Image (tube, rainbow, N blue to C red; front, side):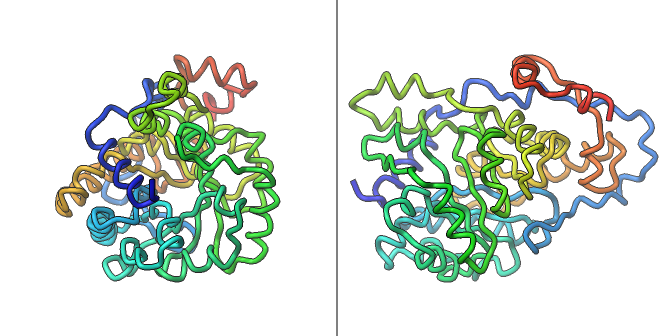
Length: 353
């Protein structure tokens, strides 16, 4: 099956089937309410600077798709909404346009979003199999992106009938890329999270996107495509490190920038992720249906709702800027608290800051 056809199937499945993880661990987090904020709501500044670009608040639309005409419609709508709301955007895997340069147009959305932070995207297996800095530079420069994410999708690949199971020497390959590329380079998981042990090996990069367990399960997506080993793939549906746990682990690893994604659905979720240690968050699936419908106004309204939720969370935590959230106490409960305890985390750090 061609990469282009596979991307189309992924879009269809995400729209039509239940592909969510069975538990969103962000529900196990809550803030300690500030009854006397001592700030004025309208004076709160939600903006941040990320990889040299200003964002109106700490959100970008995570990588979704590319390589098909349908993908162009989706990416175009997302780009327009991001430009109007001042947030960033990640492109879907650009493998299709590297395999077939005629598909580059499906990712070329800079004309619709001249100011946004735009992140290119190629999978690590492609570099293991022979891609070099040449393909990385092409992926970024051909669409006027600002940087590149190399996605780490071992769980998805092993769930695919046509998966690329090539990850040997990945760390040294990433290190070599970082030394040769003239723009920021980050590693991005795709739904299974990044542990402290892995993050400690990636501190030479400009950051990581944890993309943890809690949102779209790519094993679930592949389950609907599977014919052989279907039950095996189903058993991987909830494999991974929960997003909030992954953020907390990466916080102590020494990585420069942490992006929290994987089950982030609201502005309150974004605030929780930043309180745990992230600098920004990514959201994907909740925007897909509106993007397919080319409903830019609907996308803008949804983003603005999430922004207001985030600002409310800041207000109720007496935060003038997003970075203030990192000093605010959190309640940790449920399965997340149990997992954090097993990983030896100091709950006092989060409870009494």
